[in-house]
Length: 221
Length: 334
Image (tube, rainbow over all chains, first blue to last red; front, side):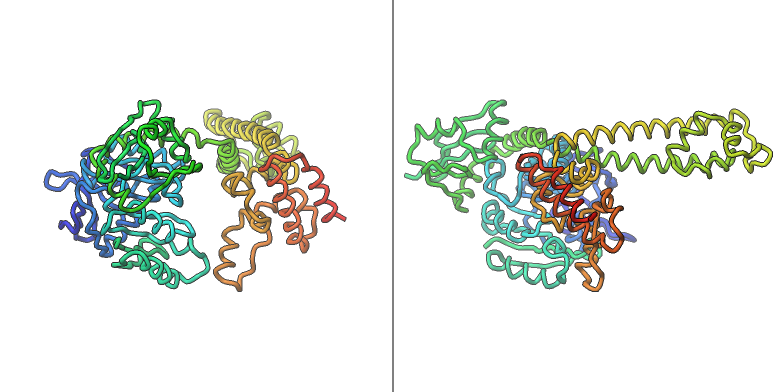
């Protein structure tokens, strides 16, 4: 087992496993597997259920998620990926988890009540000014929302809530922008749009974990 | 000297140029919820006015629908300064965020959601009944295959086997029990079959109750839509669209193919595949009266009137449902 990024472990073997140290040992956040390695409990991070994990398995470098960092997570859904973020950031960090659907926010609230470093925010990511009172500027930002203007939303949030020099990652779903267009074309267009304001370090296709998705790793100038 | 006004989920703050806290008006538990909701809506809150009485002029950091001639800023440097200053209060803010999120979830439940769940529930119940009765038939056919074959309707079948015994049922079909292909069952082998039939019957009852509830709900909440599209089809369309707002904003061409997404996207990706003519709309009673070749046109006309009806309901206009339905009938059934 080796630590590929602070707090994120990769176990080589028959099957590659991505692991994070469980913040609340003995407790599962969802239905993930728990592994006990040398007396420490780890939670398995399934790349088919988390776009960030898929990106990490495919070699994304995200230097800004450290213990004690703050993270803004847009499109948190029921909080699967958020729970791993909370593992990585540890008790001193914080994930601001923004989600627009009230139904899944319920699960996010349950998660936040069991893990002290999660702050759920029920708001529309398209209007970042509206959740200014509930969120602080963060070291890292991640977005995974299936909206037509996802790139524009990402940039708007990065302007307000990302620290200078901070890293951010965008999981882009090509099919949400245009169902008929070739994904590759859309990725190139998205990259050009991101480069106007951010430094784009990496663009990773998430195949075979997700179809027609790409992860963009960017940094604020 | 520049001063900044910023309300977080825990307090209203006044910062100086170096982002030191000049003033803090903390919220109590009740205010955290009330003010949190107000701030999310872009309203001014009393603590902000209190702070502005002491510190003026001031630059407001935040979003307000009514700007009231104040100067605003959402500059990167300002938000960065405030965030650094409040880093130590992170966990208080997170706790307040949870309170606000809980209230927002509570307030988000609308009458649309009830219709959505009831409509989906009805569909699931229908599926469940089909599944149970299929198993029931398989089992019962060992005992009395002829009756099962003669009653094709599931609900009638369940009622029949519960109300009459094998002798009576066979007599109705003019078959003697010697001729019948069914074997004879000991009473204790028959009991579980009848128990399953009772379960199926109660499922049917539940379905009927939900159906009449949903019809009533739709007819009172969306009178126009229900009049044009029939209450149950209206509920199905609404569930597919997701909410009243979404459906009211849809063009009629989208309403026409609601429920035929698979075929539609197949067409959009590959233009040699023909587009679908109709989605859920095919279940409208008028569609079965229209000749097969004219169903495309019929779906278009119907979707057109449905889209008008839903907009009348959305903007709470006068009742025009029956007139709209009459227009559809005139166009299609002449």
